[in-house]
Image (cartoon, rainbow, N blue to C red; front, side, top):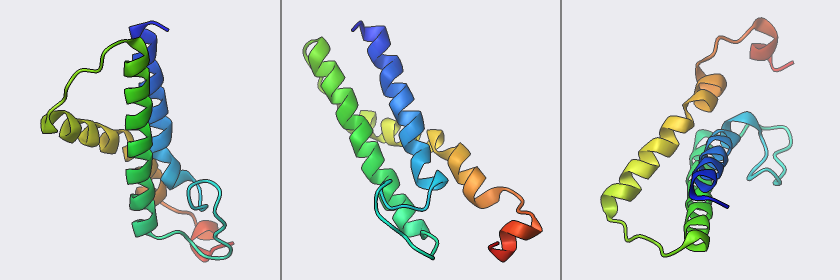
Length: 107
């Protein structure tokens, strides 16, 4: 795999992972949540876990391509901000969109 392809794979994984907490009601895609909505705290915990998973994918691909580059705290802060930015479509869809009368009543 080339370096350019690895970058696109990490970005694709990041976009999907950043929006996963907002598009389903299951905990980490497998845990059952019968009859109740998932709270904001669970969604933020999932978002952090998916960010760490995405970071792991990036580290793995970077290691497979060659020597890993040392990173300072600035890199991780910018990466977290990028991940939160990628999560904005899911957040808007879950919390900021206008709901119709059927969705408000829970039907």
